Image: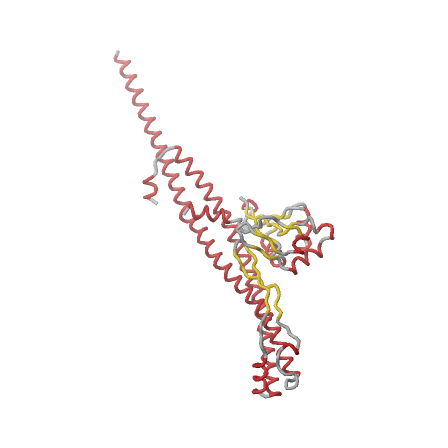
Length: 126
Length: 216
């Protein structure tokens, strides 16, 4: 049973991309390769939304997918967003005040995932 | 559980090893619980969106059937069926996939269901404006149904993953962790017992040595 659990823990972050791409790159080619060998396609409408939220000079700096860090220390169902541009975009999408680091709770996370289904991804940290 | 407890050796090394295993299992349990919460959130969000989308798609379908009936009444059933047989349909879809926490779900990016009246294949001379309207409405319904199918498949796959993750969490919570904890409790008890044993033995030896010296 422990082996199964260990395998599950190894697999936990296998859905993340090998390399995050910039918004500019994603607008040209909206696909990323994942660590598990698969591919993940970004929805064009979401990329357009992100594009509209940032000035053109920042398109190269915003890395997507935006990672939502799920840390058990934050409590059940809470996630953290790091990165200046990532936080700016998420704050604008949710209508929140911009901060260096954002901690989102279940209703906000659900709203964010509803609006940015393909351009956000969960990262599980211990 | 008793069988597992009976096979372990009550040593300090084993105790340290077991405590490490508990720590790992607890961490795994917390992480999987986080994953389960996230999956549940996705599942509920999708289910909510499906409800809205289904209502919208069925509304469109109802309207399309209404328009078809109107067209049949105006043009005649046989003529409408004839026109439908003349139309050849090859639906162009752009289907890719996205990953939700490792669950691969299909993504329908673009459905090119709408066609110009000249592309539909039936004769424009024999058809009427009502036929065009019905065809257009069905094409729009088709787009909505494709979107609905994407969501329903996603929710089905997320549901399966949710069930699997819940099984793992439950196995950790109700089987592995209690078993490891009972092993730790058993070893701790045995070590305490051995310590008490040693203490009593030493006391006895001391008393014997003191008695021998006193007799001298």
